[in-house]
Image (cartoon, rainbow, N blue to C red; front, side, top):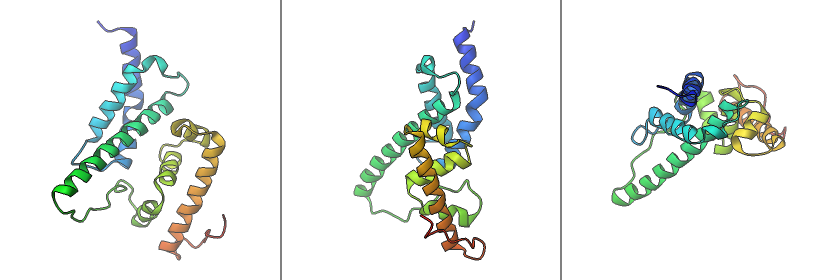
Length: 177
């Protein structure tokens, strides 16, 4: 027999599970460590524990915040594992696969040139469809700070696109800051 809480949680998973999977697919490509399904399971476990804290009007943003923390923890663990591994054997070439889910090579290269902070807010705004207020909620910053970061991230992204392919991206915004 299911409880009302279990039914509400099931509805939450059905409503947002695919969105969270795509969130991880765009941001996590460390196949040796943790799968997207494992990351999603960790988010859902935290969401279940904190289900009473879940804001009814911002469920997805709350889940994005949890997902962001889960991904950060996973990257820290991977970094520690890589440090230990590098002590045991010499490092080999590592492929830049962080942004493989994004199709265009020029766009992918421009995103790779951004700082992690710029890349995160730009991906939240473009792929997750978050406005600056929602980005602020996910990142734990003020709306004003989110607007400024997003504007700067867009300028940096445009400058990298122009530098990579001036003919396809003729607008040079490097002096626009």
